[in-house]
Image 1: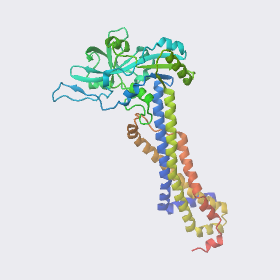
Image 2 (image 1 turned 180 degrees about the horizontal axis):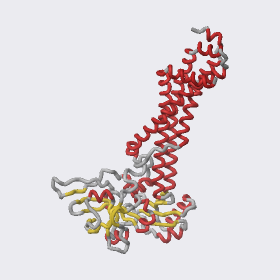
Image 3 (image 1 turned 30 degrees about the vertical axis):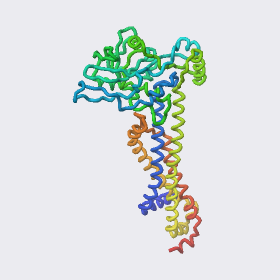
Image 4 (image 1 turned 90 degrees about the vertical axis):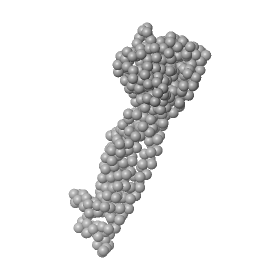
Length: 446
């Protein structure tokens, strides 16, 4: 009898194709919305957190307050570099707008004593410095302004993630004891038509190009800058994009431009297993002892904020998407109720030949469950396609590049199970009504 019930349920769906497909469509839309939002939200969270992990979740930046002002003015449109002199053949290059006002380095932590800081806070395992300034640059054919980043050798060796990975495509980074040389980001190298061995003039000083960097791991807008704002995210994002930067080691920069503050940001790494919060408190106390006021910003704290924010957004969006699934369930209930009314005589015949109430109940529950299963399966497939197609434009919109939707097993199984369950529950009342139908009354129905 169970096989007959399955055959009857399938026959009912096939003989009422238009109505069945419209019912399935309601569930399909809800399932598609849930899959799309969860997959994109999970992928977005993973992409942003991966950028923080590349830097290191044990890294803390000591940032002067003035840094926020610089990062906030960063855009992708850029500074003008002129090729071919002042004539009509000159063209403008985009190298990133990085706050030209005053021509000074970003902030100044004063006379920070790194050795004393490490002595006061034993949890610090590594320390490096970095500064940024916009200088007039020229390669002969190309002239204009560009961002010059001056990291210490300790920062380059110990914190490559802060500089977008700092992987060399050509040449190499000069030693601290070597004559001053420059390393160009991938973007500015192409824009300025400069390669390894060429000469580039920075603020009137000619330097040889020692190397070219590979494109940084963060070459778009700052890491989720539309999602995570504030001084910390801006500072990390500003440093991580080296594509439009010229790199000069801090020791060389201090010798070439001695009247400029070169230690605007300090990066420290905290020993594994030590509380980040407690270490930051000790760092603040140590800075106060040196008469300095700086803002410690932890990658771990920023990553936690990102995860919490995106988690809340995802819950809200999935809740909204679930409403469409609920609407589909109401539509399915209406369809099943109509089906019971139309098949009253058929119910009477089934009962007259020995079908029990639970078998009639199972027939209509199976009917609604199959439609829910079909809507969930089709919605799952459509959700995967929509997620893949929406990834690139959405990433450009919110400022997170190179992320892909994530389809965890619990999502795939959950959507199928939820759709089937919703379908069965939507058909429960109509099925119960059908099971309670009196066979004599049902047979007398036209």
